[in-house]
Length: 84
Image (cartoon, rainbow, N blue to C red; front, side, top):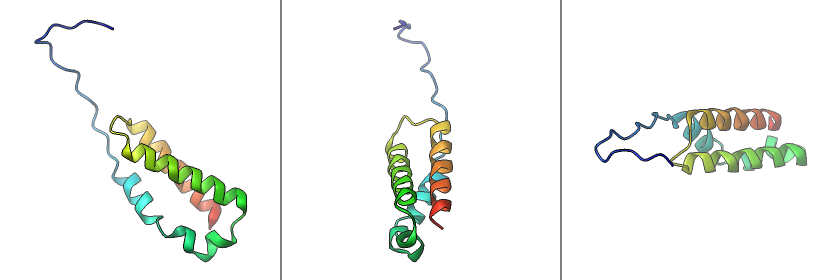
């Protein structure tokens, strides 16, 4: 761990935009009640549920990077497309 002087400027955290991830998670709240979800394969449902849970964790993580957010959005969208 590097020591820094007391008056050294703190490292500025990169701004992370979670809006798209939040929209994707919110939009999918009722997906499991749709005909497409009910008729999907067990594998597709499992992959979707796993991607949704991972997306929620990234959304709740205050230290998530933009790369993690983007990856969660992509994974959730891919899993959702396999349901439809």
